[in-house]
Length: 370
Image 1 (cartoon, rainbow, N blue to C red):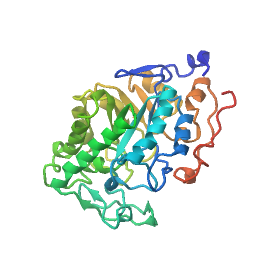
Image 2 (cartoon, helix red, strand yellow):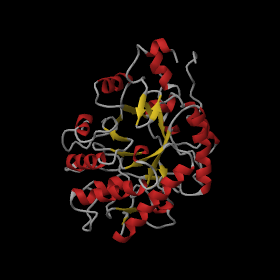
Image 3 (cartoon, rainbow, N blue to C red):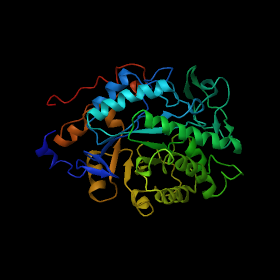
Image 4 (cartoon, rainbow, N blue to C red):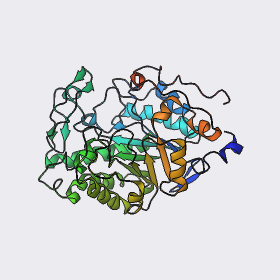
């Protein structure tokens, strides 16, 4: 990195940051990116090691969404964190990144209704309520399939799912991660409990905003028995429509969630505030200042940011960190390109995002001056 350039180009984005005692070399975060390279056994492999090493100049890397249990699976060849082989596979990556001084968090994932019976031996996927995704199809081991109606989790079953999150957090620690991010966004299981569109339960997990938040609360508190609060984070997507989400009371739901999470002293709150990938249009979009008003800890913005808008968000105090997703697909040296004002590589072909090959994954060029 050219230090003289970095003091001129995006000085706030490229400044160091103390993340609750974890030293980050810059405020540029590699967002979790589901790439589907772990194979049928869902074990991180050498190709994944290379991919993450290439992007090690990020201030913080959040690993791709990683399923906490077989029940949580819903994406072809995505990695898991529910057996010893998966722990060993992830440990190769954490060791490689730590050798390069890069902190690494694991994102804990349960797909809920965003899955299909073909992932589960013919059994239906589970959710907060038996409400199907309104969409064209889902990619499954048997190819494209129509979405199915999930089975609502029984009240007595919920505690077992909470414990699956706790065990996954234990395995993340054993694998050498620096912390965990709870994926409560993008229409996956926790989001399905939070959102009144997908949660029509009549038990203690449904109805009021307090009850719909209960599942996330229990997961956070279970994980806090494994990790200190300053190594646990949560991701929310208040504005998103991915996986057919969005309810009229979204502002109440996510303001309440953020205010409750504030009490724990978490590592950060990761908010998908951008509208680049769709907006439900059920009211004015929620913004980072709204979350600042109820969450006093480190705040991370995400979705559609450019170098310029990221710098402005941090310079103004709206965010402490900005996560970049799609730019990292084709620019392993994104930090260096931002620091030196270098042009970015062309965007990655969508067909390669989750293809099982190194092409479109680890073959993007670094800038010639690196």
